[in-house]
Length: 317
Ligand code: APR
Image 1 (cartoon, protein in one colour):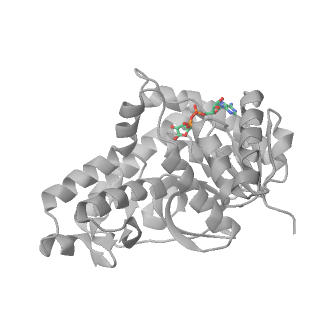
Image 2 (image 1 turned 90 degrees about the vertical axis):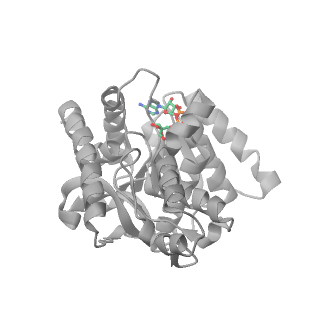
């Protein structure tokens, strides 16, 4: 059987890390596409040259021609501009919506059967633009944010409890960023919910509140430290978990920006919810029951996603 083909649109910091992880995990062959084809080709060659040392045979090429992504099984999209100091969220929407519309056209014409994972920010709006403009089935177009947000949440909880990250599960919902909604009662250490751990004296509610706030600002904390650019190792690892769930039909339950068509009372929006990812793409949206406070936080988050999508609609129709 031929190896799977994974196209990475955007060969920047996240794109390069994605290619490296795909090699190390032997998930498939890689095509990196970028408006700077030299960067894409250089990274592809450099990473492929680590194959003999690390023991992988993935073939990697770079290109500036969409024909190169033809027949891809998975496309991971990071193309776009980063948010620069002084830029509003709306400025970023207008720059990146145009980029995503172009990428969507490239996917539609060359690999309409692919599973597409969008990472470009503002995430919930960009994944909506991707689905609209590519015309791909909504279950084959998802946004990566929840795996990253919940991974950050898991790390901070593990550090607080001094336990392995492997034994901490976390549950987040809603849009990516400030309005993300962590559900602490569904977040656990080896199955013990966080509110119970507070009662058991493992931590205090104040500390949990601080961890929640730090998680919601997780991207901002890294931007401040890096000064030039945003997080890339954890975002890349998160998207790879989603790609692997699809390619291996693992039916993993992961939080992702998914197209809602009535679930949670929402129509035609992309919002972060737990989903089952398998060979069919997003095979199921998991609908949980909210407490009144959770419902209010979720609604607030959805309202901010709606605003971003409305801004995108004006730009790309
Ligand atoms: N088509 C293809 N590639 C493009 C296009 C386009 N129209 N416009 C820009 N690019 C490429 C850039 O040339 C660059 O190589 O996208 C790449 C983006 O890479 P970085 O600037 O290094 O950004 P990165 O850190 O990888 O993040 C990408 O993910 O998390 C989000 O907010 C982040 O939106 C950003 C995206």
